[in-house]
Length: 245
Image 1 (tube, rainbow, N blue to C red):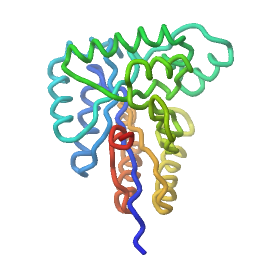
Image 2 (image 1 turned 180 degrees about the horizontal axis):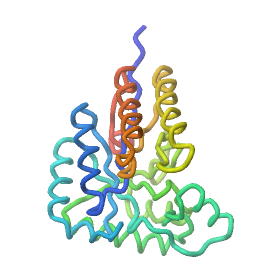
Image 3 (image 1 turned 180 degrees about the vertical axis):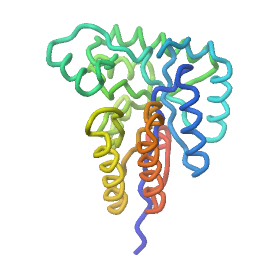
Image 4 (image 1 turned 45 degrees about the vertical axis):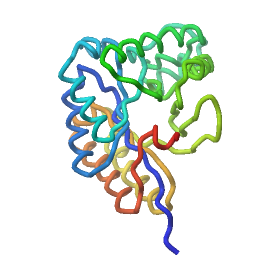
């Protein structure tokens, strides 16, 4: 009996004016393979660049990408850590998000304010979104309530895709690189090996691409090898919006 195709998601993180070049390169790699991606947009100033609406060339690139079937999604407001929260949350933020867990310790009111500011900037670029991936995949309970109240259709953590306002959670581990450090090569091999095992078993999974990965040719090769393994095993590439629907 032929096994049904399993879904897999490829996301491009940290899309902003300061990362427009790497983001475009990842898009070209994925377009070459016919793989739609979910582009995670940082609408506020990030990495020394302006807010997203102030880069008309990037805005045009994003609209064209959406026209080709890629999804545009929200990825924080400025992708920068916010002080506060108990010590254990600050520790998790440092370890898992390198201090960039912008929505990890926010109350519902604080999260709604930041989410609203991000949506306003995207609206200025004529971009509408239905999903949210928090920086570092870290979202406080208040953030999750704010997302539901603002009408988002889903949010993602590192291990799953969560529909809003509720419903069955789609277990779906995310494979990603962590450039720099002694474990970089091991991590690259682990991504390929994990993709091979998951794809062979028909297990849904995700591949997260970051601008910094392109500074390391080995990381780019490993990520694209993981994508190719998923396709070769009969995986069905989908966006988060398609999965949530």
